[in-house]
Amino acid sequence: MPSTELLIAFFATTAIFAYIPGPAMLYAAAQTMARGRWSGLTAALGIHLGGYVHVIAAAAGLSVLFHAVPPLYMAVKLIGALYLIWLGVSLFRARTQGDAALPLIERKSARRAFFESITVEVLNPKTAIFFMAFLPQFIDASAAFPVWLQFVVLGTIVNLMFSSADIMCVFLAGAMIARLRRSGRAQRMMQRAGGAVLVGLGVHVALQKS
Image 1 (cartoon, rainbow, N blue to C red):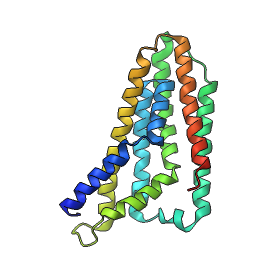
Image 2 (cartoon, helix red, strand yellow):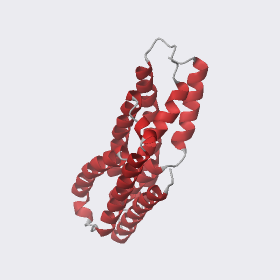
Image 3 (tube, helix red, strand yellow):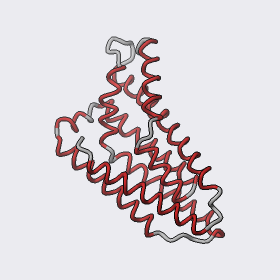
């Protein structure tokens, strides 16, 4: 494995990147605002699991394709952006139910948020580029462990730290809406706010130049 000094730099840099607000944190917060804390947590779990797809891709060197074939990168990026926009519009159109039905609705929404978030993360080419560009800075080719194993270990650590930031964001959003939960109008407003965040994320991803 890398030296102690390199590992310290790795953990410090990863922590900085993890806790800077980004699309994954905003997505988890949006799901919390629209569907409740449990849906936000399952969305964070889905993002975490989807991240392992990029960890494995980085370890296998497949992410290089996004550099070698720019049209492939653009295609995946636009598909992911359109998917985010579609999710946001779906939240705008969804109806808010009465308090008595909330527990069942939240369980159903949590399952949906889980699978949606996996798709969102897998379709995020920037995550693949990040792993492919960031992790090699801390890989030691002369270490006892093979390079691919170093990619997997360091990628897993990155994924866990990013997920801890997403979970923190979910709890902050959950605390904010807890006081508004009894009001049907407030629920509707938070649902629309969550939808607006997702649509905004989709538009932002689509308009990014790289």
